[in-house]
Amino acid sequence: MKIRDLPKIELPREKLKKYGAKKLADYELLALILGSGVRGVNVLNLSEKVLKIITDKKRDQITFDDLLKCRGLGEVKTAQVMAVLELSFRLFSNTKRGVITPEDVWKLSVDFRAGKREHVVAFYLDTQHCIIERQIISIGTLSTSLVHPREVFEPAVVLHAASVIVAHNHPSGNVEPSLEDREVTSRLVESGRILGIELVDHVIVSKTEWMSFKDKKLL
Image 1 (cartoon, rainbow, N blue to C red):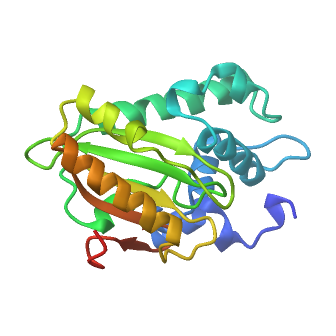
Image 2: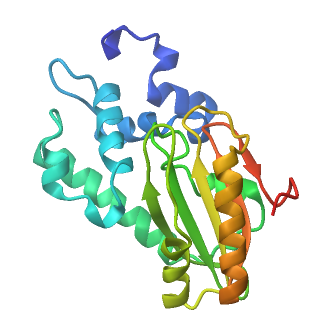
C-alpha cells in the first residue's frame, strides 16, 4: 500500500494532530522528520529501515555512510537523521534526570523497546539517583543476549557511578523474566555488592509495558 492510499487519519501528521505525539510509533515520528520517501519506498517504510540501522548499532558506531546506503535517504535526509540523533543525545546528556520508577526507565528506552533484537542498556546513576550516562551494553539475537557483569560495571567504575539500573527489551512483547534473565540479574546483584555499586533494578520493557525485578521482589 502506498502512503497516499492510507486513510487520512492513519497518516502520521493527522494522528499527531488528533492524538498527540505520544500516540505515534517511533517510525511514524521519524517519518514526520523525513517528510517523504522515494519512488517505490514510501516514507513510512523508509523510516522503518532507518530505525533498524539505528537500533542495530551503538550510537558511536552509526556513520553518515551507513545511513546513506539506505535507499531513499540521500545526503540531505541522511544529514537530517544524523542531526536528530546528535541533538537527542546532547539533550539527554545535558539533562539531569532522576530515574525513580520502572515507567521512567520504560520512557527512556523508547529507541529500543520495540526492537526485533534484544538490547541490554545500563543507566549509570549518581548519589542523587540522577542519570550520569546511559550506555548500550549489548545487542543480541532475536531470542537471547549474553551479558557479563564486567560489561555492566566497568563503565560504572569509570563514571564513578553510585548505582546502576539495567534494562532490556523482549522482542516477543512478553515482559515476564526468563530463567536466563533471573540468572543474569543474580550475577549482577552479586557483582555490584562486591564492587560497592548497587544494582537498583532490572527492568524488562516492550513496546507497551514493562516489568520491574525490584517491584516483583526478584532482586
